[in-house]
Image (tube, rainbow, N blue to C red):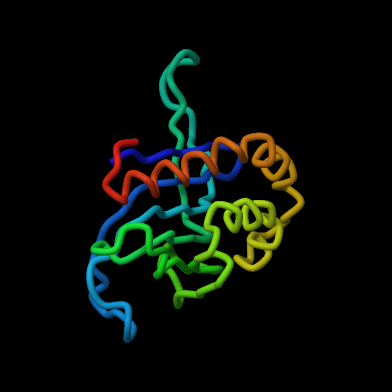
Length: 162
């Protein structure tokens, strides 16, 4: 399956098709799930190695936020398990947060959510949120590409070719 990575200056957006079984599901959430996972991650500076001509390492650091555009694996298109994790600690998600709008129109919900990156950064206790202003502006320029990747990965997870 394809994974898209959109690297900005200090942030990255990852989009991937996923399928898994929750080992400790909430009631009504049992069974295999599949869909698209979107995360906002920090990009971590790495020391230059080698000559001035050497490639520079890019490290995707900790995840700050996650949206899971999931549905039951046996009901493609149901959009019945779509949720998000507004804050993550040490790459671990907190409880699932469900939103009716997310289930009704996941791509429009993603557009709105990715337009709220400063709030996501504040909620994730990132110091100096203003230092990410260039990332926020750059994301808005590339938002159509990110949203297209979200739609493509969800389509792929539903068993269609990308």
